[in-house]
Image (tube, rainbow, N blue to C red; front, top):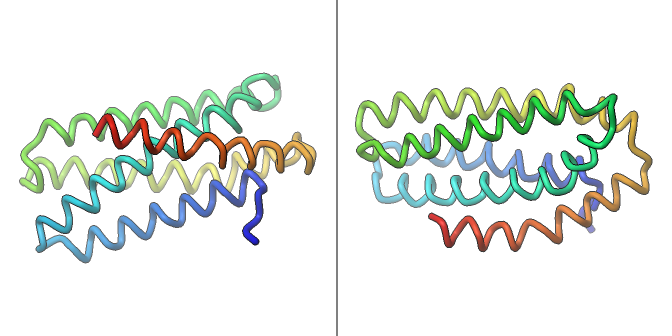
Amino acid sequence: MASSNIFDRLKQDHDAHRLLFEKMADAAKDEDRLEKLFDQFKVEVSAHAAAEEESLYATMLSRPDLREDAQHSVSEHKEIDDYLEELTDLKFNGEAWRKKFAEMKKRYLHHIDEEEEEMFPQAAKDLTAAEEERLGKLFAQRKPAELKRAEAES
């Protein structure tokens, strides 16, 4: 059975997002496939961010030693959301869209690398194993509802 630890669950999502970027790169010349993959990415990332904020970040914000990291990551979620909104307003797969997509991809990959390499290990020092399990279950409970919300909004 997959781990229900919050950090393992988040890393699994991050790996799925990295895989979607690879699939989008492979689909660069197949516009219909690229658009489907991009739409899937938008829904996945939106649901992931919301569930992450409702579980891990909500807990981190309540802890003085972790608050700054959580605030930083929430602001990066907003930045990625802004990129996705800007991409929606551009001609899909046009030159401006591809440039903006490349910027968003770079920022998103930086964000998840930073979470995994810096924030998660720091938060793990402050959380008990039981808290990590509880947050993992909360994330797993919230994500399906957030996926439905994100799909309805896309």
